[in-house]
View 1 (cartoon, rainbow, N blue to C red):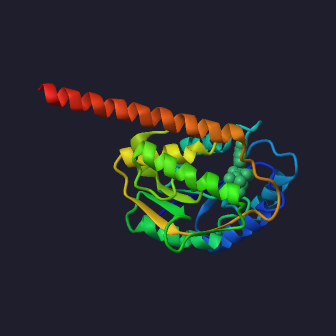
View 2: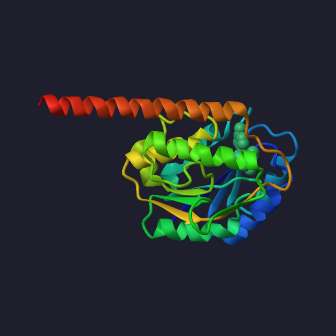
Length: 246
Ligand SMILES: Nc1nc2c(ncn2[C@@H]2O[C@H](COP(=O)(O)OP(=O)(O)O)[C@@H](O)[C@H]2O)c(=O)[nH]1
Ligand SMILES: [Mg+2]
């Protein structure tokens, strides 16, 4: 299946070279596109050098930091008609490229969305502080409860999407610019009736560079999740009332 791996970067010069080399070795037949939002630390130079030797690697440069969700949304919109499978992976080596073949196998076996999950048996997180673990765990619990998602890791950033499922729900209505994008895509996929499979992965906190997680990102994700949850609740109540009066 034609596969595109999308790697968003923002100041990842210390890890992007190793990530790309390991990706190419792990999935030699896949195309890879790095989407950079104006890093000035040499990230793009490393990618361009690698791309010169590996024609399957491309660089997409955006002029300013638009957020992880916006980087994926723009790139998926521009590419999904050319590929069968679209992959998300972080640039900081938190996700092991060597685990990707297993995720791709699940998609090839029929899943519409494959989530590299930290919160299913066999999955784990190495190196996060207690507060970061709490934020992730409670964020996931809140999203599942508010949106009725039977997914253990709705915020995970290591995933495979079948292009046809993205085509089905469309990207035009996806609102999140930040990491809430992961929750929103999961929510839309569930609503579209997608077959979603969670494959256990090991997530390792980055060894270099800095996290771009911010309070603004958390607030955006929390607000959107709450709005969708309340909207769904009201719609369900209305449907129940209409059913009763019939
Ligand atoms: N293109 C782009 N990439 C981003 C942006 N924010 C984060 N990233 C990338 O998204 C991935 C995950 O970000 P990271 O800071 O590691 O988040 P954390 O793992 O949740 O702490 C990394 O590859 C980042 O370089 C952004 O605004 N634009
Ligand atoms: Mg990270």
